[in-house]
Length: 98
Image (cartoon, rainbow, N blue to C red; front, side):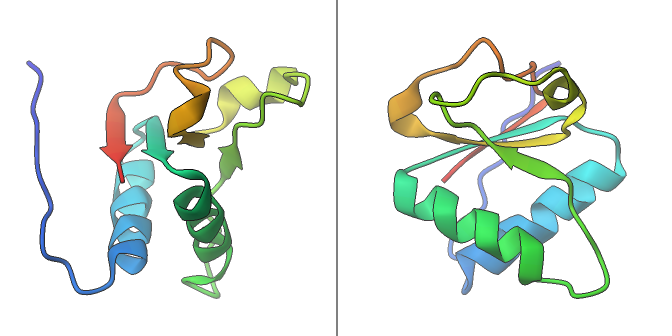
């Protein structure tokens, strides 16, 4: 069954999303984050720095790059809203729309 959850009014959206992605990743979910260009860049940086002792494997979709076979194993994908729904990004069980 499909479930929709809204997370509103959080004081630090980037930190909250990082924690949400960490939780989803620990549960084995494949996640797609859809955001504008600035939010994608900020989230990409935040995922590298929000927790010094952890690493959340993720990739930022870039239509200019040729897909690599290892991309299919990446659990968290950051995609820009203006890039549409690229076929090279694997299906996700969790969608986060910033």
